[in-house]
Image (cartoon, rainbow, N blue to C red; front, top):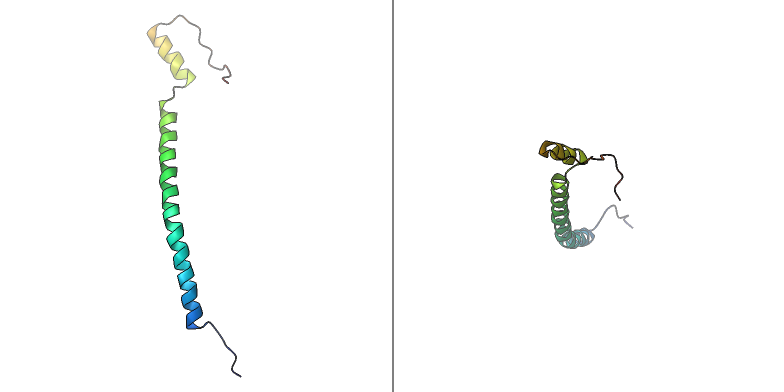
Length: 77
């Protein structure tokens, strides 16, 4: 008997079909997740940009002539 040394064409086609099915399922999921992730990143950056630091608040109070003492290192919960 002759020893087989490789894959048959049918086995190869079955593997290609399975990879295609996985790709059909995985690609839309990947794209939707990346779009959601990008939107979350944009929201996070906007939140960070919009927040004033205690130093900026103190400077603003100083420039407006406020007489209140400003505590910069107070721990906020």
